[in-house]
Structure formats: structure tokens, C-alpha cells
Length: 198
Image (cartoon, rainbow, N blue to C red; front, side, top):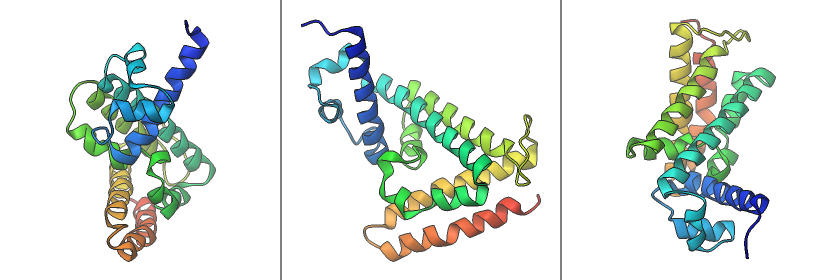
């Protein structure tokens, strides 16, 4: 039976959603095409009707999840402020639900081992996130052309956020107290660095 264009688009979206969650939970190499398709409710054979390869799927997923993460960053910075963004990012809820969270703690390490479209999508996503962090200054103003201090503050902040989440997840099972301590202490340190003039 021939599938309508609308149904085909809905099926493709379901695959993208399943891959988005699984890649963020377990990394690109940690999940196979058959598992992605099963999570989306389809058989393995239908995959290549939607995507040329797993790499092509991964690159599209990365573009999507980074765009969503950057939109969420802007909403928080402009609505709640940087300090609250740090607290929400470094929250146990985010640690425990990687499949719905920021892609960087899982996928940035994968990108370092990838070439081609996956690497390119990751670089675009990280650059876009850094740009928004740099354009949103501690005093609440938003600039179009961040200066060197803005860029340095953004790199420091993003590195601490992502690194802190990686460490919190890495220690959560074997040393939950340490994981909680990382998440509890880091937001205040980040806030202090964010609001300290360069």
C-alpha cells in the first residue's frame, strides 16, 4: 500500500524524534538503526526510504537538537537571566533525563570522533550556542557584535556547564553524593564568573 506524502512526513518525524532521544541518551555509536526504527514504531527496512545513512540521520538530528537547545537558552537568558539558566542546566532533572536535554554533554564527545556531516552539524550547533551566550551580556543587554570579553565569558560558561553535566552523569551511579555536589556547587561559581567584569 502506497503511503501518502503526509504519512511519509509523519513517519520521518517519528524517526527523527526517536533518534534525537536515543542519541542524547547513549550517543551516536551507542544505538543502531534497527533500535531507532523500533523506537519509532517501524521495521528496520523502512529506514533507507527516509535517510541515506545513519550519518545523514545523525547530522539532521544534531542540527535540530542544537537549534532547540539554543532557542531554550535565549528564552532563559531573556526571561529568567543567566543565573537561573545555570541552575536549571545544572539540575538533577537535566542530569537524569539526558534524552530530553542539551545535546552537548553526550554528542560533543561523539562529534570529536566523527567526520563529515556529523562534525559539521556539531560545530555549527556549538558555535550558535556560544554566539548567543556571548551576545547576551551580564547587564541584560543584547549586542549584535560581541567583543573579546563577551566571547571569553561565553566559552568559560559553556565549558563549565557541559563539563559539569558530563562529570555529574559520569559519577551519578557509583558516587551519587559527588554527582549531587557538582550540580549543587557549580551554578554559584558560574554566576560569580559571569557577573565578574573581565
